[in-house]
Structures are given as structure tokens and as C-alpha cells.
Amino acid sequence: MKLEWRRVSLPLKDPFTIARGTLHHQQCLIVILTQDGVSGFGEVTCNNYYGHTYESLEAALNLVRDTIAEQPLMHPRELYKVCQAVIPTDRFALSAIDGAAYDLYGKTQGIRTTEILGLNTAAETRSSYTLGIASIEEMIRKYRDQPDWPVYKIKLGTPRDLEIVQALRAVTEATIRVDANCAWTVEQTITNSHALRELGVEFIEQPLPADASPAAQREVFEQSALPVIADESCRTEEDVARCEGLFHGINVKLCKCGGLTPASRMLQQARALGMKTMVGCMIESTVGISAAAQLLPLLDYADFDGANLLAEDVARGVRIHNGEVEFSNVYGNGIELLI
Image (tube, rainbow, N blue to C red; front, side):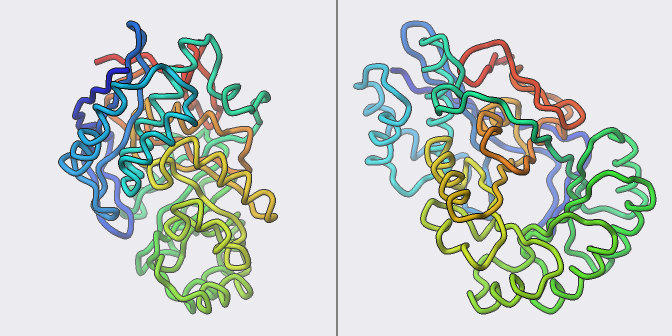
């Protein structure tokens, strides 16, 4: 197999702000695995919070390129083991290879990735649409630009958090979820949870910093009026068990955990522990979204709107239209690259 990649800078429709900063473009790598003229595609985004740059990702891919070149076409789970032995700590790079491996394997075998994963029935779970932090007027404008989604995820972490949710609740009856991206204290979370419950909010995603103590997380878990979903606190397979009794559910992201192979195991483990399951995304192209969407049958909640936030895309594949997940007719992850 041949491993290649391309640097891409994805322009956003609007500046996207969370508690940690603002994006105008998303930098990513499109990873390409080719065997006998058939190509599979994966994606990974650069990310300052997790310490990944073009240079660091490319260094990891260069380390594993020759090893991949020596391999015949194999099941993605087996290729994952091969690559993990070479770059065990760079889960971002592994996730892009893993996504491309499923896409390639499915295309060569004439099956979809959901089938490769043993998931035969598409679920009815719909995706949320994310409203990044801005002025209240601007957030309402962004909502009105996308008024037909069944669920909205509102980014919080400002002095006006409750005002933001009140203003958006005044203009929509849709389900609302909130994501504080580690910006709240224990006291803020518990207090806010009661006000947010009155506003019909469904859950709170990652209110406390990822390094908050188990005692702090447990206090929130026990006293919050709303379920609390782990994101930054649940990066790897080992984190799932640690989240039991501290969170009501987990949000898995492919780049954080290493790809579809570990993500599917994490979701099954969480379900076995009685936790809710969610898969989210970074702002990314249809390449990354199409991989994540293959896990839909395992999910209680989905957040697949990353490509909908872009001014320009680089691929066709799974399409998210007003929250509906529309799968491609192409095998594998369903991706057709446009660049």
C-alpha cells in the first residue's frame, strides 16, 4: 500500500469561537492510502490544544510510511496494530490512517464501513448544529441561517452564558445542548445546570477542565441538574472506565482516540457501563465527517456538522442535511475527493 497526504486549509463560513480561541481557517491533512489503483481517504486536523501541527503529523506519517508500503491489503483492524506499533503515541496521525484504511478496504471489498465494523442497521440519531461563541445578536443570526436543525449545540464559556441560552431559547423550540469546553468551575456548573434545565437544555458537555480532580467531577456528577458528557476528559480507550461514575456519557472524537478502530470499542464499552454515547467532530471536511458517521448505529447523540461550517469542502461523501445523516452510495466511508 502507498501512503500519501496533502496539506489543506479549509475556509470557514464564519469565524468559529469556543472558550479557547477563534478559527477562521482549519488546517488539516488529507491522508491517502492506495492499493492497485484504488484509494481510500482519511483526515486529521491540526490542533493547538492537543499539540498537533502539520510538521508533527507529517513526522509521524513519515515514520510509518515504509512499514505500510511493505503490507498487503488487510483488514483495517490488523493494519491498525501494525501502525500502532510504529507510532503508538500519535493518535491524531493514526486516526487519519485508520479512516483511510476503512475507506480503501470497503471500496476494494464492495462493502460499506458500517458493515466492516459489524454495524448493519443505520440508526435514527440526528446530528446537532453548533453555534460558536459570538455576540448574542450574531449567534441568533447564525441560528436563523440554519433554522431547520432538530438540535443545536451552543458553545459557552463567557460572562453571558445564561443570557445566550435564554436568547436562543426565545427564537427556537429545538433541542439545545451546551458545551463549555472546560471553562466552568464546579460551582458554576451546578448553579448553571438548574437554570439551563428550566430552559429545556438536554445536557452539558465538558464543563470542567480535563485535569479537574475526580472529587470535583463527582460533585458535579452528583449535583448537576442535567447530565454531563465527557469530551476533553475522554480521549482514549483507557479513559472510558475512568469516566464511569463521573460523567453520564462520553463524546468520542476519532482524532483524539486514534480512529474508527478504537472509537468503536470505546462506544461499546461505554454502553456496557450504562453511559450515553456520542461521537463529535472537529471543524473538518466531508472526509473526516464521513468516517465518523459510520459509527451512527452505536450513538445516542451525534455532532457531525463540521463540514457544514465550511465555506468550501474538498470531498463528497456522507452529507448532513438539517441534522439528517445521508450516506453515500460509494463503498467504504463513501468518500470521493474533489482536489
